[in-house]
Image 1 (spheres, rainbow, N blue to C red):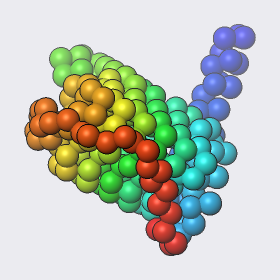
Image 2: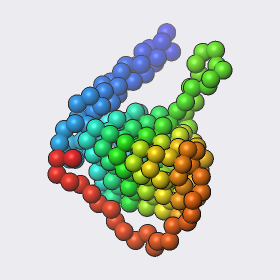
Image 3: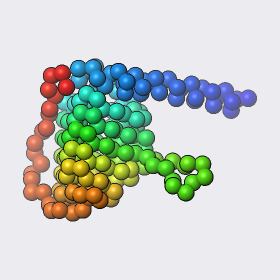
Image 4: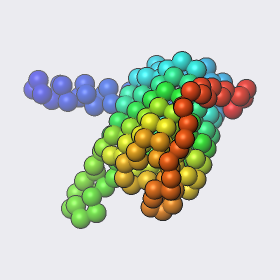
Length: 187
């Protein structure tokens, strides 16, 4: 009997958390105020540092597993799938329409088994528009992912990758001292 009560409490808590997630994805994400959007995410369990921005139209899955550092700029219409855990360190730039996908289904599974793995993005990384980063990937400090790339493997520090699948294209030469605060009004 106790285990059934615990199960129902857990299920009820998940239902409440879904309300917060759906409220964000259906309504709050379009509200033209960084303050409102970030505080909604924080209230429902995300950890978000100072000076960060999540532009309008982004979708977030599993708000409680989302960690965003200081001075992070996340463009419009991004998918932040934190089901496996999503950590974005300080001074990261994620352009519009980027998909960070934290889970997948096992193709040969009889019960459509899902696998969730964390994504980790190091400080000063730059992920260009329409790139897709799959679960279990680490993007190193200062790394650059080219536009429309598919990242299936880890990217090293200061490494530049691009393509489908993303391949090594060069190394970045930067002291990584910039602070990319970007919070335009009504975005």
